[in-house]
Image 1: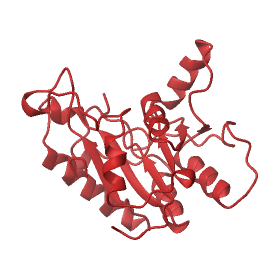
Image 2: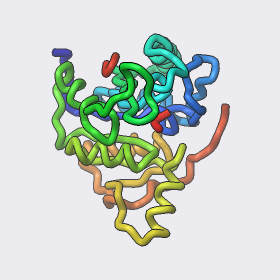
Image 3: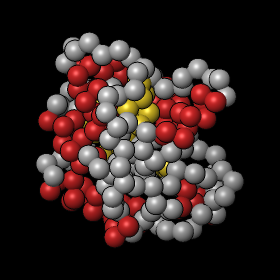
Length: 222
Protein backbone atom coordinates (compact mmCIF):
# COMPACT_ATOMS: atom_id res chain seq x y z
CA UNK A 1 0.00 0.00 0.00
CA UNK A 2 1.28 3.46 -0.84
CA UNK A 3 2.40 5.41 2.21
CA UNK A 4 0.20 8.33 3.13
CA UNK A 5 -1.16 10.12 6.17
CA UNK A 6 -4.69 8.81 5.76
CA UNK A 7 -5.89 12.34 5.08
CA UNK A 8 -7.36 12.16 1.58
CA UNK A 9 -9.13 14.72 -0.57
CA UNK A 10 -11.26 13.04 -3.20
CA UNK A 11 -11.89 15.31 -6.16
CA UNK A 12 -14.41 15.39 -8.93
CA UNK A 13 -12.74 16.38 -12.20
CA UNK A 14 -14.89 18.30 -14.70
CA UNK A 15 -16.27 21.55 -13.33
CA UNK A 16 -14.14 21.20 -10.20
CA UNK A 17 -10.52 21.09 -11.38
CA UNK A 18 -10.98 21.93 -15.04
CA UNK A 19 -13.60 23.68 -17.13
CA UNK A 20 -16.67 21.66 -17.98
CA UNK A 21 -16.27 20.56 -21.60
CA UNK A 22 -18.82 18.29 -23.29
CA UNK A 23 -17.30 14.80 -23.08
CA UNK A 24 -13.78 16.06 -22.50
CA UNK A 25 -11.13 13.62 -23.71
CA UNK A 26 -8.62 15.61 -25.78
CA UNK A 27 -5.65 17.19 -23.97
CA UNK A 28 -5.94 20.31 -26.13
CA UNK A 29 -9.44 20.89 -24.70
CA UNK A 30 -8.27 20.80 -21.08
CA UNK A 31 -8.39 24.15 -19.29
CA UNK A 32 -7.80 24.37 -15.56
CA UNK A 33 -10.19 26.57 -13.64
CA UNK A 34 -8.53 29.65 -12.14
CA UNK A 35 -6.74 28.77 -8.91
CA UNK A 36 -7.24 25.01 -9.36
CA UNK A 37 -3.58 24.17 -9.94
CA UNK A 38 -2.62 26.29 -6.93
CA UNK A 39 -5.26 24.49 -4.85
CA UNK A 40 -3.76 21.12 -5.78
CA UNK A 41 -0.33 22.38 -4.75
CA UNK A 42 -1.67 23.78 -1.46
CA UNK A 43 -3.36 20.51 -0.52
CA UNK A 44 -0.28 18.45 -1.39
CA UNK A 45 1.95 20.75 0.64
CA UNK A 46 -0.48 20.35 3.56
CA UNK A 47 0.05 16.58 3.43
CA UNK A 48 -3.12 15.37 1.73
CA UNK A 49 -3.33 12.51 -0.71
CA UNK A 50 -5.31 13.69 -3.74
CA UNK A 51 -7.49 11.25 -5.65
CA UNK A 52 -9.72 12.07 -8.61
CA UNK A 53 -13.06 10.23 -8.69
CA UNK A 54 -14.86 10.77 -11.98
CA UNK A 55 -17.71 9.28 -14.01
CA UNK A 56 -16.81 8.90 -17.69
CA UNK A 57 -19.99 7.97 -19.51
CA UNK A 58 -18.36 9.01 -22.78
CA UNK A 59 -16.54 5.69 -22.73
CA UNK A 60 -19.81 3.83 -22.24
CA UNK A 61 -21.39 5.74 -25.12
CA UNK A 62 -18.47 4.97 -27.42
CA UNK A 63 -17.38 8.61 -27.79
CA UNK A 64 -13.83 7.85 -26.64
CA UNK A 65 -11.82 5.03 -25.08
CA UNK A 66 -10.33 4.20 -21.72
CA UNK A 67 -6.93 4.89 -23.27
CA UNK A 68 -8.11 8.42 -24.11
CA UNK A 69 -9.15 8.97 -20.50
CA UNK A 70 -5.81 7.75 -19.18
CA UNK A 71 -3.87 9.84 -21.70
CA UNK A 72 -5.79 12.92 -20.61
CA UNK A 73 -5.08 12.20 -16.95
CA UNK A 74 -1.38 11.78 -17.62
CA UNK A 75 -1.38 15.11 -19.44
CA UNK A 76 -3.29 16.74 -16.59
CA UNK A 77 -0.66 15.62 -14.11
CA UNK A 78 2.15 16.84 -16.36
CA UNK A 79 0.61 20.29 -16.28
CA UNK A 80 -0.07 20.20 -12.53
CA UNK A 81 3.52 19.21 -11.79
CA UNK A 82 4.68 22.37 -13.53
CA UNK A 83 2.71 24.28 -10.87
CA UNK A 84 4.14 22.23 -8.01
CA UNK A 85 1.21 19.86 -7.47
CA UNK A 86 0.14 16.39 -8.49
CA UNK A 87 -2.84 14.06 -8.35
CA UNK A 88 -1.84 10.82 -6.64
CA UNK A 89 -4.37 8.63 -8.45
CA UNK A 90 -7.23 8.82 -10.91
CA UNK A 91 -10.21 6.49 -10.69
CA UNK A 92 -12.94 6.56 -13.31
CA UNK A 93 -16.16 4.77 -14.08
CA UNK A 94 -16.62 3.92 -17.79
CA UNK A 95 -20.12 2.48 -17.41
CA UNK A 96 -23.67 3.70 -17.94
CA UNK A 97 -26.76 1.64 -17.06
CA UNK A 98 -28.92 2.95 -19.92
CA UNK A 99 -26.81 4.61 -22.61
CA UNK A 100 -23.80 2.35 -22.60
CA UNK A 101 -22.88 0.00 -25.40
CA UNK A 102 -21.40 -3.49 -25.22
CA UNK A 103 -19.63 -4.38 -21.99
CA UNK A 104 -20.00 -0.83 -20.69
CA UNK A 105 -23.80 -0.92 -20.50
CA UNK A 106 -24.32 -2.13 -16.98
CA UNK A 107 -25.45 -1.21 -13.51
CA UNK A 108 -22.20 -0.94 -11.60
CA UNK A 109 -20.96 -0.20 -8.11
CA UNK A 110 -18.37 2.34 -9.26
CA UNK A 111 -20.54 5.04 -10.84
CA UNK A 112 -21.12 8.02 -8.55
CA UNK A 113 -23.08 8.44 -6.33
CA UNK A 114 -22.16 4.83 -5.55
CA UNK A 115 -18.86 4.24 -3.78
CA UNK A 116 -16.93 1.65 -5.78
CA UNK A 117 -14.22 4.08 -6.86
CA UNK A 118 -13.64 5.18 -3.27
CA UNK A 119 -13.39 1.56 -2.19
CA UNK A 120 -10.94 0.81 -4.98
CA UNK A 121 -8.80 3.72 -3.79
CA UNK A 122 -8.90 2.33 -0.25
CA UNK A 123 -7.09 -0.79 -1.46
CA UNK A 124 -4.11 1.36 -2.44
CA UNK A 125 -4.22 4.25 0.00
CA UNK A 126 -4.96 4.48 3.70
CA UNK A 127 -8.08 6.61 4.26
CA UNK A 128 -8.93 8.23 7.58
CA UNK A 129 -12.53 9.18 6.90
CA UNK A 130 -12.68 11.56 9.85
CA UNK A 131 -10.00 13.68 8.17
CA UNK A 132 -10.86 13.10 4.53
CA UNK A 133 -13.10 15.05 2.15
CA UNK A 134 -14.93 14.94 -1.15
CA UNK A 135 -15.02 18.06 -3.35
CA UNK A 136 -17.30 18.38 -6.37
CA UNK A 137 -19.59 20.65 -8.33
CA UNK A 138 -22.63 18.39 -8.55
CA UNK A 139 -25.12 17.06 -6.06
CA UNK A 140 -24.18 13.51 -7.03
CA UNK A 141 -20.58 14.24 -5.98
CA UNK A 142 -21.81 15.29 -2.56
CA UNK A 143 -24.07 12.25 -2.33
CA UNK A 144 -21.14 10.01 -3.23
CA UNK A 145 -19.00 11.54 -0.51
CA UNK A 146 -21.75 11.13 2.06
CA UNK A 147 -22.41 7.56 0.95
CA UNK A 148 -18.74 6.84 1.52
CA UNK A 149 -18.77 8.64 4.86
CA UNK A 150 -16.63 11.74 4.38
CA UNK A 151 -17.35 15.45 4.70
CA UNK A 152 -18.30 16.85 1.30
CA UNK A 153 -17.69 20.32 -0.12
CA UNK A 154 -19.68 21.80 -2.98
CA UNK A 155 -17.80 24.26 -5.18
CA UNK A 156 -19.56 27.02 -7.09
CA UNK A 157 -17.74 26.36 -10.34
CA UNK A 158 -19.14 24.03 -13.01
CA UNK A 159 -22.71 23.21 -12.01
CA UNK A 160 -22.19 23.92 -8.31
CA UNK A 161 -23.82 27.33 -8.02
CA UNK A 162 -26.75 26.11 -10.14
CA UNK A 163 -27.29 23.02 -7.98
CA UNK A 164 -27.08 25.09 -4.80
CA UNK A 165 -29.63 27.60 -6.12
CA UNK A 166 -32.02 24.85 -7.25
CA UNK A 167 -31.96 23.25 -3.81
CA UNK A 168 -32.65 26.60 -2.16
CA UNK A 169 -35.53 27.38 -4.51
CA UNK A 170 -37.03 23.98 -3.75
CA UNK A 171 -36.80 24.71 -0.05
CA UNK A 172 -34.57 21.73 0.60
CA UNK A 173 -32.03 21.57 3.40
CA UNK A 174 -28.41 22.02 2.40
CA UNK A 175 -27.23 18.80 0.80
CA UNK A 176 -23.56 19.73 1.23
CA UNK A 177 -21.46 20.18 4.35
CA UNK A 178 -19.68 23.32 3.16
CA UNK A 179 -19.94 25.59 0.12
CA UNK A 180 -16.86 27.17 -1.39
CA UNK A 181 -16.61 29.53 -4.33
CA UNK A 182 -14.06 27.35 -6.09
CA UNK A 183 -11.41 24.70 -5.52
CA UNK A 184 -8.91 27.13 -4.05
CA UNK A 185 -11.46 28.32 -1.50
CA UNK A 186 -12.32 24.70 -0.71
CA UNK A 187 -8.63 23.93 -0.20
CA UNK A 188 -8.26 26.88 2.17
CA UNK A 189 -11.26 25.67 4.17
CA UNK A 190 -9.97 22.11 4.48
CA UNK A 191 -6.42 23.15 5.35
CA UNK A 192 -7.65 25.62 7.96
CA UNK A 193 -10.03 23.10 9.49
CA UNK A 194 -7.36 20.42 9.72
CA UNK A 195 -5.04 23.00 11.26
CA UNK A 196 -7.57 23.56 14.03
CA UNK A 197 -8.73 27.03 13.03
CA UNK A 198 -12.31 27.93 13.85
CA UNK A 199 -14.44 27.89 10.70
CA UNK A 200 -18.22 28.04 10.79
CA UNK A 201 -19.40 24.94 8.95
CA UNK A 202 -21.74 25.38 6.03
CA UNK A 203 -21.13 29.06 5.26
CA UNK A 204 -19.98 30.22 1.84
CA UNK A 205 -16.25 30.75 1.58
CA UNK A 206 -15.18 34.36 1.62
CA UNK A 207 -14.53 36.20 -1.61
CA UNK A 208 -15.86 35.28 -5.04
CA UNK A 209 -13.17 33.50 -6.99
CA UNK A 210 -15.31 32.12 -9.78
CA UNK A 211 -13.91 33.15 -13.12
CA UNK A 212 -13.49 31.48 -16.44
CA UNK A 213 -10.41 31.35 -18.57
CA UNK A 214 -9.31 29.35 -20.84
CA UNK A 215 -7.23 3.28 -13.78
CA UNK A 216 -10.67 1.41 -14.56
CA UNK A 217 -11.40 2.26 -11.74
CA UNK A 218 -7.68 3.36 -11.20
CA UNK A 219 -13.13 10.44 -16.00
CA UNK A 220 -18.53 14.26 -18.20
CA UNK A 221 -20.30 12.82 -15.34
CA UNK A 222 -23.66 12.34 -16.92
